[in-house]
Length: 432
Image (cartoon, helix red, strand yellow):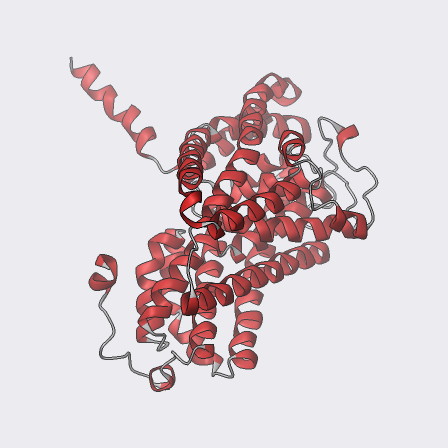
């Protein structure tokens, strides 16, 4: 009896651990086992292959259903419609800039160079890329069903956006279809959650195989990946965001940096855009002077579709995988990565494991080996701190720009060193 009672907590400890901790443990154990077993660790690879196959299974339906739901949820008219359009354009534009910065720094610092890894299916990658014009033409699917079956992500995204907009425009007649897509999207979110529970075991199998085949030197570039992602995040916030505040809004960027300090710290520690939302709304109103109407709409929208940090991370990691497997990307591949990550950001934010899911989507789109996921999965939590912070800072920047353009930015509050007296408390924001 006593022995049984003592044994129970050990099982509970694992179940209570957060997913990122389980993945980190799986990675460490995989490295140890792979180092000890050497080439014999090949027998553990099928465990990782099953997880990779499960990830591939999610990509098409998850992006398709969630993107449609994201579009159809924005049924606003008049002023709200104008605010929605401004916010969406800014969010997508900053996302494209973010992934471009990530790609640029990864190309400059080459974190994956010298790994000389070999893909499972080398014939499926590294093919001659189509011309840029052809890439743009290929965005429109001639057969949407064929695009879904073939897993052509960019075509699927374009079709989903078109269908979502059409459903939003036809009003009441679209309600049955929208409810169906919402149900399917929720089902995919739950399936994604279930698949991500397998991540620690999949990462264990893949890392054991990688460490056994390539040795411990494969882990050294991960430090470089972390450094590049954090540098890119710093540049995006300190240069691009402050530049937008200064040049476009013609405001003092120092006030913006001071105002975002509290929500940025919350985002960095919680790695949750939704969890940071109360702090973001409070800071935007008290510190920045953004009106209640703009803050209450633009910031929750940003927590849903703004993926600047994730896009930046994808740019670095995608190029890291390409360099690790000695795959040269053409200009059209870079354009495809930017378009895919930007457009997909509307539909995949807020999904558990969104960073890894979106990275697998980007890798698949340009034909990079998805095995590269296992290498970065172990440090995903560290990278998540940087990318969530960037997301939150971007949300606040967009809320300021939209409020300024609509004449709903209190300049006295923005330029003041003290918070607005009538702004809500944290408790009020949470209950709102």
